[in-house]
Image 1 (cartoon, rainbow, N blue to C red):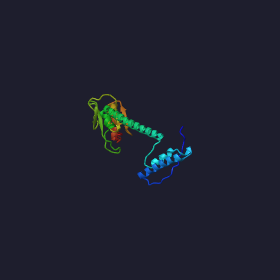
Image 2 (tube, rainbow, N blue to C red):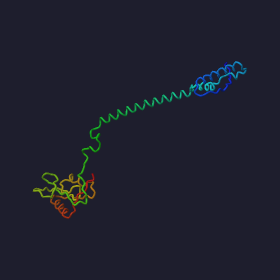
Image 3 (cartoon, one colour):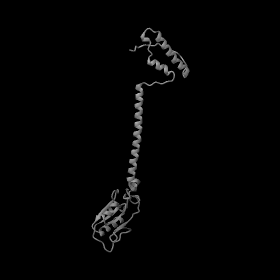
Image 4 (cartoon, rainbow, N blue to C red):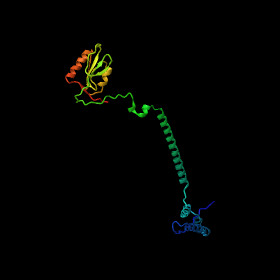
Length: 220
């Protein structure tokens, strides 16, 4: 069996950075260890301790890594490489998904909500305090809103009509589907349903004469 022996080292001072001096230090330590081992009668004084040998070799600028530190360093490098590979793969997948979604988007989706052709935009808002009024009536013949002073047509159907005296547009309208867009969501709007065109026209003319007709700003 191998016995445990200790070699007593003699401390040698040298200038840092001088490789020749460091090499001489290691050689001196080794020679002294051999001499001590040859002359020593005690088995406990003839073994070179690893820590002392490493310290002597580090003087030469050599760096030693313990097996544990080496394993940790390798594991750290493996994890770093795996993380780099994963990040690169995730980025590639994200780019593929983005391009796929972009290809499937319609022109309106790509341009955003402002490009929606169904979005209703009302006429330019007018101040509520303005004295200007936009009058008009619904023509049963052409079935559309006509600007200007309401005039009774030659043939008037006895259908319900709507009078809007306060809204984004004012006048007499045959269908609610036309009148509602001028009052829906408009603050302080005013409208009323009449059973015939004659009643609606008379009510509108009376409101206009009394100054109750107002054009309100659009909420859109």
